[in-house]
Image (cartoon, rainbow, N blue to C red; front, side, top):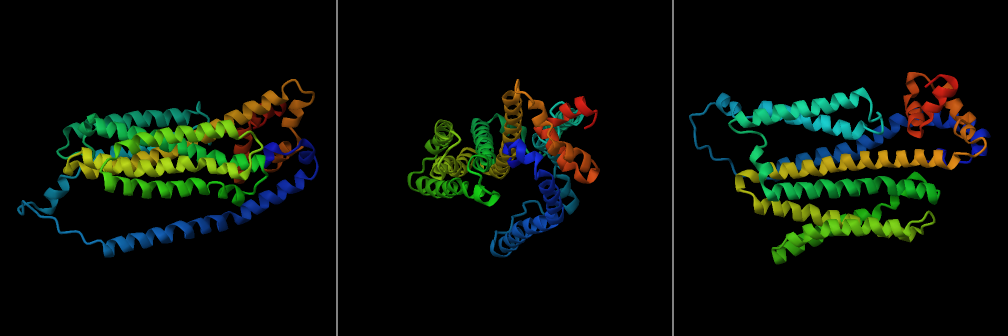
Length: 359
């Protein structure tokens, strides 16, 4: 973002040394960043697994048919359906993650992934129709409570995830906030998420009514985004970041109300499957929101730059400043593919190919 909003004079001046230093720092600290991310996420996850395995005491399952062998029990597992379902989800997530950001939507690989998604999805449907105990029964998709809750979860999570992508970039561009400072502007959303989950739990426990919360959650999300559109004008006060609080609150309410709604509306033998599908819907919405928000942001940024410099004398030279040329000539090898992707993000490759026959 600083590369985009920086002035051309800065690009043409000390930008060369800054770019070289920045590239060296990024490459030298990449392993340190990955190590810290590993240490922050993996140990707590492993500790949680151990705590659950030790502390959670579940009653032993009653075996009704003791004549079944281990092989008979294994044959009841729908391995084929699990494989095709996982392939479908993986292909869909790759499309959402790669499309528009790492790969253009017209890339052949996107079409390959689309074909793989449809093919694996059809194979999953076919296997589920003939499996004795399918991993996800198709008749669950015909239940009103399942369809509505999954749809609300995916749409609400998509919108909130896209907002979480754009908010830090907004304050980095308008308030010159650092990466750590920009991250603090997301705290109201996280606080709202926590509070929403607690409030929803207390409300449902006392009243036994969960539907109003499921209806209220999308309304609060729409009000949150509308308030941002009306108040964030490029000169926003840090206090205006509190306006994202209702979005986090809506997600907290929805996570609890949707869970209770699925549990109350399905049979006991279907609750495990529908609950797993609920968490899958949250994950798909998160991936779609991050990818969609990034793609929209990049496309709007690209078109805005081209429109702002259209008709301006030397406008194309600004886009093709010596900093951009330095990126291409210095870091064109495979070890700096991220910088080439930066050019693709900014829409520079088309201009460079027309002017210099590269990229």
